[in-house]
Image (cartoon, rainbow, N blue to C red; front, top):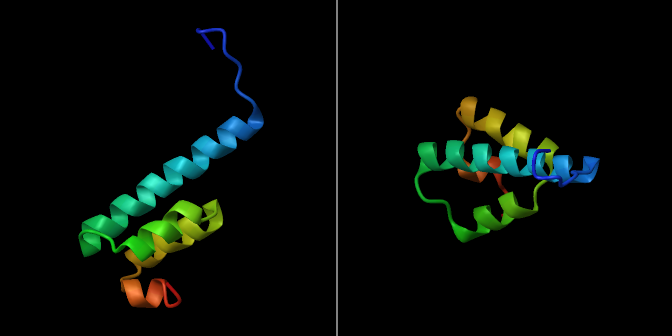
Length: 71
């Protein structure tokens, strides 16, 4: 990197998860409007796999209650 800082593989993993989290949140907000705190909490704790699945479910037309039945 130009600044002399080195990123580890773990740093990149965190960046990827954060990008998925932002993308998923944007899709959910675009479709459903402001998200309830319980959904925001789930997004913050989610894995990449969960975030990808939820993003696909938005495209499949599922509702928040179907996507997050236990939240």
